[in-house]
Image 1 (cartoon, helix red, strand yellow):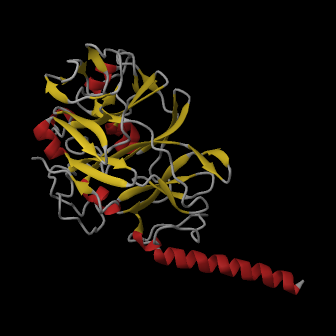
Image 2 (cartoon, rainbow, N blue to C red):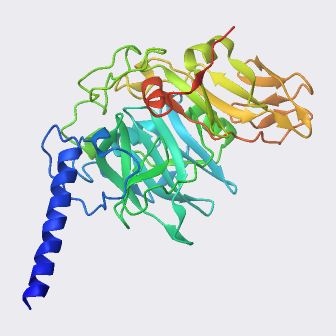
Image 3 (cartoon, rainbow, N blue to C red):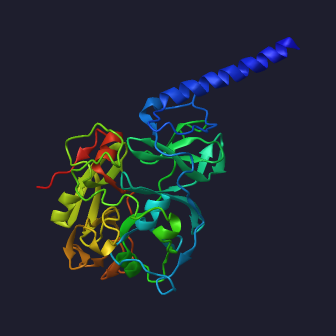
Length: 383
């Protein structure tokens, strides 16, 4: 009997010790409550690299949210505000970043795919993942929430099945039972509302929710004026960070991964060229650019926000030919066939009409965040 009691007390003491050690390692500058069942003994990052910014589920997520069409009652999106655009099995959906600044994460489905749409405003990182993962020789469907933890100022999600912590930019489980498991990144584009409906006139878009409905205490859109200046790493928004000096911290970049190698393309360089025909690690691809897309991290009135543009990336190899492109008005023309393509990589007219360029897995981020996770990235320099 005494031996059983001793074993129980000893086990409880070990758990308390583990909790205290973890609580001491994870930075908690605001002394917020720590209410986790996460197995922190399984970790592939240093716990001291993590910070508690808000309480667990302090930011509510969207779960299978409602969508509308552009002609439905209530549609009030600004034509040049950015959306995350996805298209799976003939179903197109758009997630405006103006809403994702408030929710940051949506558990959803599209065309039979179970997905998680994420946006970290602090890093301007918008990424889509498959919520179904392989684990312990089986397939498991996860439901995600916002942990309130940050790593290099980037959001950390958690799954509600095991309370494992997942880093967004890495797309990987970093602490907990599933540590080391990777999420599959889904093909997505960050484009304007106008470009989305130009390509998908019958497409769906998130039903609007106003800031007032979300949180009556907020006078401004979340992260108001945060990127008004690309060189201003404002302590009002960001935790202290060692910054890579090669690029302004809030310069937007487009990232390309090829077999473990990474190259990033600053928007300033993309803007100058409008189209970049590139070969990286023997892979030919193209970057398209439009000027008019605005930032959702600037003014409440998006029509007054500064223009940051939108950039998309595609394999340029099609039907046995490496295509090269140039800008022509609002569209793009390939020099081999004279066909006309839009910013989603879809051919609108010409020999290749109706064909789609293969979307490279890519996203747009602030430079400071991407270089914090991938410091060995090559940086494109325009000629």
